[in-house]
Length: 481
Image (cartoon, rainbow, N blue to C red):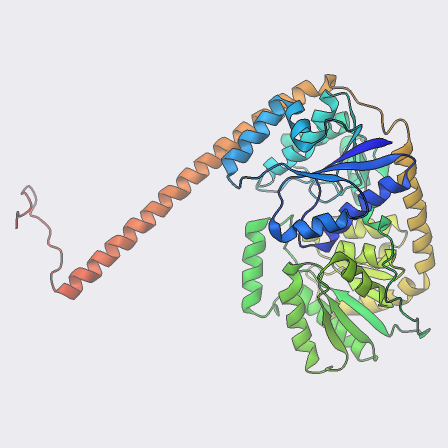
């Protein structure tokens, strides 16, 4: 068997991320001789460890955690060490005895406008560099890619091109790599499509022209990996104060739900990740006043439970990428909705599936316009689902064939990567220096605020005591009293 080391396993509250782990394991199992032998995880919070291990329960892969310290300086020092000594990374990741290094699927290959994900991007290419130095083959599992805005971003892509066999999980990323970098990636699909159907709660199709049961999966706009932690937190806090009613997602899905409920549809609002709970519950509370017997919330608590609830529907309408993927894997038609801040993956997915109209943009449109378009697309989503399923099977076969190709498993060699390592080290040092400057400025501003607060308190105490501060006459010494 060919032993595979996966960098990096997903550990999160988002069932979509966890489904990628399970899907990669299933892809390996579907190939001729691949065995997912080891999974390296950058960080592992206690709250997410059960989800990680559950996603790998059908295999025998061991797990290694790379970063155990939350100190940012310690992380940068560790990354610098690995760039100097790539073999140290392989050892710490447990990849000493693997034959193939796989870079995990996901959405992390883009350049944030403020450079906030610089360290993360270097982490993402490090395993490929280490593999090349050790004479191992490396593959980039099907990913969403771009945009990249600077010379550093170009360096990331060129490093991946030199060190791995590239693949994408949707057509927009494929076109981006071809048009912007002249790359030749494999055109595949997300590993979550390889997740087996849950086999529970298989719905009895009503045969009605209009679906009797529809699942809705919501996501806030301007929130998530691309928005970054700080902006996501700001957006979430602002939306909570209005009960999410100022959100474009809230308005669009409220209109969609009302149109469905008025036709007698039973609606399940399904939570994919804890970040969606407030939005989902607020929409339920709004709709339940008018449709108390037709609206419910499902907060499954596990990936398996999430897939089971999706499989109980006759149609799923979702702003969550993996809700669409897992619904289709469960044999349920799905319509995707998205905003530009979510990146290119949703429209790219539906292009890949030969159903581009199945991705409906929310953006800045009025809610009624989105609702009208979704219901207009609904018949095609239901009637054309067999064609979508056929396309999925074709792409799954392509993915397994790609993994089994001798060219995919051919080591790329370390020769072209010496300059890449130096460039990444330089970027790491520049980023660390800039962050140190930012930290120093933040500490100075914090100290200044504290001084002003203390001065204000002194003024208040003096006023209460009836002894306001007196200024000394110019040129004289303060009174000794």
